Image (cartoon, rainbow, N blue to C red; front, top):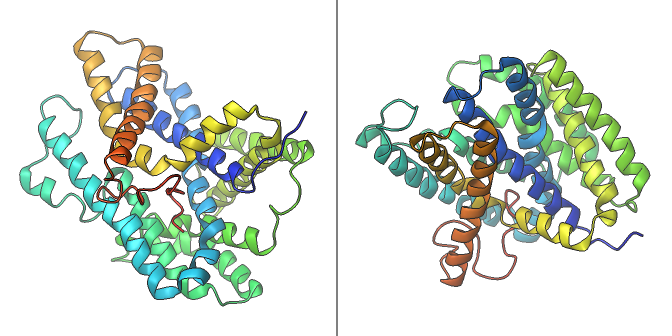
Length: 342
């Protein structure tokens, strides 16, 4: 029995799964850095599979909404809006994270952070905040491409693979790190909308084809590891498209309650993204202080803390009308189509 799914529900569901994978990926790497995990082969396989597609996913789905937003708001207003929805959260939550690291200097596995380094922590963006900076740069560039023809955009999409290869080699281009590597995914999202490839009715066959592409891409990453551009970019794009096709095609088959959970996680993914590092790391530190070294327990508790505590904080800030102050969207119901500001 299938049911009707809102046109954008599958996007929020994809984001919801993606943000949980983001938290899991950081828990996974944290366990490795803390020397709690010693199976190098298993660590590398899981790490490669996750990092192949989970961040490209957010760039691609951001591209799906981009042109409609720019046409509605205009180029100037769109850039200003992205300053509010991307740069402002970058500043606020970089300093919050830096404050935590400063207080936790004696118990973390990181290098000691000084007060000056904490104050300058957002410049240039560090840790998870590279994403917000990269997405801002990409969207600021693509504002000026909205009026280009699809043929021109397709050419730029192909050239973006070359940019991912050569721009990192150019001296002084370090501020473009992340943007150059992920521009192909964002442009792919724009092209998908222009060709209306997600306008067809979702079906199980779409999901099965996507699952095949997704599985083959993951196998390639697990066997050969994460490869540099352009081949690595192409494999990541195939995995991301396959994953989206799975969610799009199978969304009508998911029970309503399960879909509601995934879409809620997707709609609140900015809050989870900017806040998850602190509870995830604090949980690991706390468990180690208690002498707990069971990897499976660290993974479960780390994910629950990294997802649950940001959601609790989001609910409190929403109730107090403080979402906008903390860079988490406007204070109204379902205002946050996160990681794809519109």
